[in-house]
Image 1 (tube, rainbow, N blue to C red):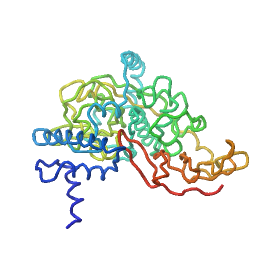
Image 2 (spheres, one colour):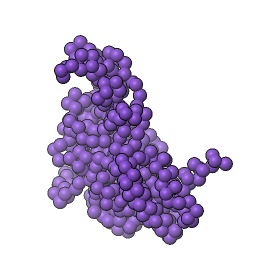
Image 3 (cartoon, one colour):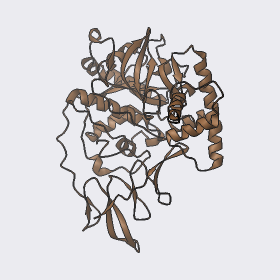
Image 4 (cartoon, rainbow, N blue to C red):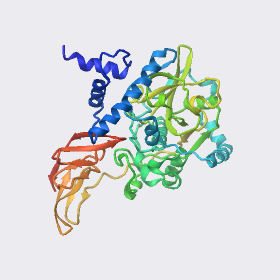
Length: 433
């Protein structure tokens, strides 16, 4: 019967938190750590995280026991974080008072474009899910980099590109984080409007595959910046507090929105139609990918950028038509979308080999790593079989870009997510150049 225990723990973690005391919090925490690959730097740190986990356990249990909410909470991947820590690490929308003035002026100038672009009110379907139409890429994970604005913007551009060209292409948040510095501040926060302006001025944006996400800010890659795979021509700001216009826009394409994502119930959301309570002070950016109704409640289908271990595989249902013009968590107050009328440029030439030095090359998609160094000069190169990889200091291993910390003593590649470290096995993936 031992094979049943992992099953039982999954039920406890993802659906309903138990109110009985037969299973200790410590055992539940250990199982949770194993489920999410969480490790801590010391016994003291783990003990502290256990206390935080226990507090979140009590909060989740109390909420779910009330039975008068249309949504439930769970001990998800963020259950070892205090509410303050969560707010500090996983948000990143940065509106300022000046933005409302800019949006007002743009609305006046862009309303003709908006009117031509949107589905007619009489043609709006009763429900819609852009995922079913192939216009939404898989759920992404921003990690502890506060770049939700970039994920919201790429999601909207991915959607309109699929609608206009028939191709669903995952676009590069890392390019926006590294290179869009006119207003946006990478992991420090930003706005979708400025991301759209950046892509328009740059004449396009690169793909996620070619310019992959690193979870931190890096120097702008000027060569990849020149790769204009997907273009947009303009963007439109939906007037604040106009839920009818927002519905009309979502019926046309996926829409970027700002909202308040810092409520504790938002952090630990599991499933159902989220109704708050929450503030309308905007601090997070997401993507509306559709809408529907259930048991008399209308809701938006919201794609988040906190990975698949949050919400319903990375998604949330959020109440709409609640009678408040600002909408739940302010979702009706900062919505925008890109406009695409021009075709994408021709495909770039086939990738060329990666040059290590004047005489040494690695194949396209590989990374040059020095395997022997003398007086600061590399005498021998090896090729890591991963693009944008991190070369380990032992000159024998490398780690993929999404696990950028080498721990050759334990034969691991690591990445930091909030206060925890996630690991994968280090492999000997070098080949001699």
